[in-house]
Length: 465
Image (tube, rainbow, N blue to C red; front, side):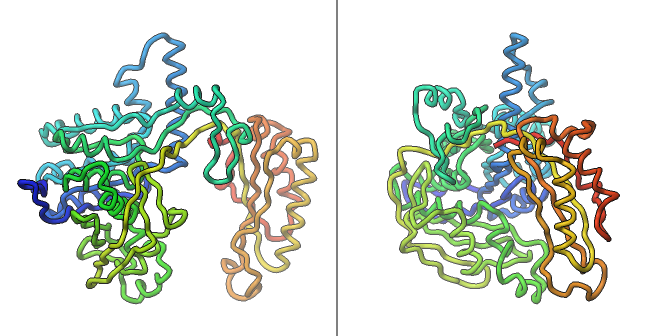
């Protein structure tokens, strides 16, 4: 069973932290697999991403509106039935409850989204119901900053988009909710108070690893070098199998050696100095080498100074050393105090969107695309097209090489017709002047060997930004 590494103020061994999930699509048995290894002290995982956070945030605001209209708050059961947390986390958590109880590994996850307290209570009840385990379940709150954000905006504070630099006013959408990316302080405090499981709403991807490492080694909040090392350790394992062979440019080497199946989940061994060793589960596919570590290291860092709510990691002197098979040492990272601000994700209703797909087969592909696009534009008409904020025609899967050679499958491409707009009726499939009905009119006028893909049609989908 895992024990804290501080004894009489003396640091002992590194904490071994398993990365159990890089997103809501990750493998169901991840927590169970990592928790079954007694040498793993703790597990971290992220079941959230920006695209799902927008939906959860919008749903939470809709519920708040309903509560205001009816004059009372939802009960726990009502919230549970319409919860705005990562439901796929529970699919991964439930099979692992017994193993977590047996081996004592800590679990810290980004999964609460906009109902963190609700998820924490669900987890607590499941532990009791499944294993009779009175687990100490904590949750970290404070990430929902909608009211503060709207108040600051109303008082003239200028918010700029990190991607394109546009201000909130230039963005042009009315914010529904806002969620800050918190740091690790709440996590380490919960662990100090004896938490077995910590549920976070929205902390930075690496915050669970930082919080666990700081708790384990007894770091102070201004131990910048150590915190920076843990930040990079967390960054390296935050995307699960990305660092053990997923999206690896040398993927053909993995296939040749038969290691392309069941890629192992990563493990970060974080030392008292903040340096770490990246490894993976034993007896699994994939690999850990300096190339896979480098690929993940440069992911989303935006330069040699990697900003985080806890610390800034300076990567200018980072060193990667291959120790042996599937073990890479990461050192040379130094830390600076964190910036005065943190990242905030803002959700707004961006309108509606729809898309259609046609298979095009055989020769004269460019001419067929022109036929299809010109017919579609003629059918839709200038008046309706002027109401779209986006109308795009894309030929996918066509290189122009080898056309006419081989099978029909080899000579098939996908014509995607994608539209967005602010008015829902533009995409109403029952409206004779809607996007869908107008495209239907082209079907029997199409070019040779064009096939409407009926299962790929999508109408009137809410678009959150």
